[in-house]
Length: 275
Length: 271
Image 1 (tube, one colour):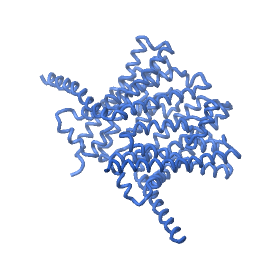
Image 2: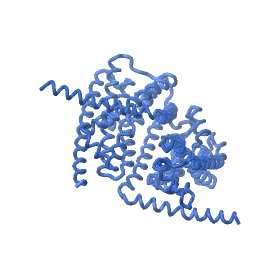
Image 3: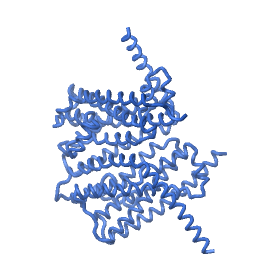
């Protein structure tokens, strides 16, 4: 009994691993297009870093940020923001609009996990390039600060993984909203702007009034950018890391379940329409 | 005689264009909720940008010599030109899709200029959001700065909005036309160009020279935003402002040439 269970788990794992691989390969096929959009990202990164660096002089302290840690934060936030771009939500929304979602339902796979695997494949490609760009800009230009001890690095990487799950679920929920709306493009843009501000992707949350920041720290959005970026720049250190990660983990699980629940609700709607 | 005929033809096309747009708007109005959602999305994006500016200026009076209200004016003018672009010429985004679906053939057999049909084939609701936000920003910033609402200021403002719109549409047209040579496969060039255009909303003085060079001479967005606004506010970049209309005209000619070359090499998709 136990043996079959573990075997089916490994089969299941294989299936999703394969999905990741397929998505990775597909992302690599369109390398030219991706590199081009990356080029655009680099220009934007450079421009915004320049904009920020014009607001803070060397040795200055702004809400607990030195010039170095502020620029490092901005660079990192940009990189994290570039992970897991619009594809998930637009793919799901399109599949609902065109009716292709039916073929998704026929597959013996979990819908959410399937799309997560698909997103992960893309993240592998995005992550690699963004890491290179961040390193080049960071070391050659802005003299980036970075964690040196293994524990902090491990905490940062773990935090990035949790951030991916939260980001994915936000995107998944937005895509599933297509069951209720005819055109989700407006929602997708609004969602990404809002999550970007509340999550600290556009500026450090420390620049907001203290009470506001404390509330935002409790919301899931902070887990998408602010938490990993703070760990990297040392804004969160020592025992505070554990607490921040725990909160992030809690949100990752909660969001995953919430997205699942909404998907189930949406499915019921399909049946009604299908008659 | 031939010239007369030509003028008649042009007038007919000018009269036709609003009708095309009307159809596009009708199609959009079918979905009431989404219509306002699209406009609200762009307003929320601009509110976010204002918020970003407020944070950026929290402790500093000026960035690159520009005060916060000056940047708001620059930002407002640049999205006003976007509002014209997305309300009147949103169709430019559909070119690669028309090619890949083989729908371009349908437009080519009609006795109306294909480019006109394409440009007027869609209506961007977000343009209304740009219009409201940009208008509010320009009016407020204008009163705050005091040096905008005079003949000279209004002249540069109109020039900025018009050349900004022409430059944006031309660049998007060129980027979309790339699909003629990729066999209709969509590239993300248009989106990329659109995003880079956003850099024209902030004072160029702070950018490193490669970025300045890029958005001045390679994809000349700055001529529709930064340089004319620098002329209104007497900034160092003002000396290039007079080139704006010339640059806009030049890139428009280039874009139309690329479109024509694309059409010539177009042979339809499928069997």
